[in-house]
Image (cartoon, rainbow, N blue to C red; front, side, top):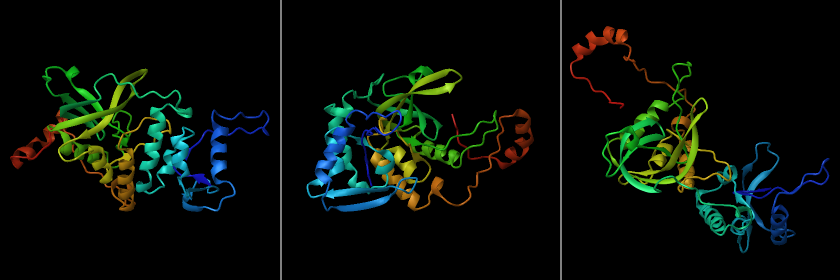
Amino acid sequence: LILAGVACPRVGNPRLNPPTPSEPYAEEARDFVELRLLQRELKISLYGTDKSGVCLVGTVHHPRGNIGAEILKNGLGRISDWTIRMMSPVDVPPLRIAENAAKRSTLKVFESYAPPKLTGASEFMGTVVEVISGDTLLILPSGEVYDDESKLKKISLASVRAPRAGNEKTGKPDEPYASECKDRLRVLTVGKSAKVNVHYEKEIPVGPDRTEKRQFGTISIGKREDIGEVLVAEGLASTQRHRDDDEKSARYDDLVAAESIAKAANKGVHSDSDYKKKTINDLSDPKKAKTHSGSLIRLGNTKAIVDY
């Protein structure tokens, strides 16, 4: 049985040749669980299995509480992203609270933990100027005059993955719902005042041998507390699969819960139906534009979207 929501350091195997050593605090974590669970008759809730189908994944209900939360509270393990997704959303907050407490106290496996360092403010207000993709925007901070591109802040939605746009030069097509996700984000954000909470930064490849430091955060507009959650709930984007020690959105569990509902409803990227891409006439080529000019003139006023 794998405890849902928790990953402890691995215990070594002395029988191998050469023997593998235990990771730091592995044996202490094993002793901690053994002392509280061994030879006890306890209730277990099962959620599924691992990929191999050999190990069950579940929660052990101890009379004094959730053993997983106690492991995390004492710094003897980390939250396991792939198993916590199997749990009911209502059972997740105690685990997250326990892990955050251990991080703040730098207990055991978190002894070298340090909060993510940000190059700018962790919170600011601004106006969304451009939507670059289904999960990345350019925002003009409040009080700034838009007289130079350097005044804009590039923000990606934390823990959200939008379908990727293709590349005409390499012949790579758009992923399904890439244009729909970008357009929905445009409708929700462009020209509107937004509150941005930055959670972490990452180096993102932007070309051969070149990277840029990108900020990832939660964007709130009006009554919508998290624009990323709206996209995930509508099936236009998915949650990012993080490593157990990665920084995540502060609203990560809400995003996972929204994705579970979208999956159950077969919405968007989770649909079993064949995706039908919208036909778009790209008239950026002057020759192609000229062939369409007559019909466009005859149409008179035409509705259009200014992309940028």
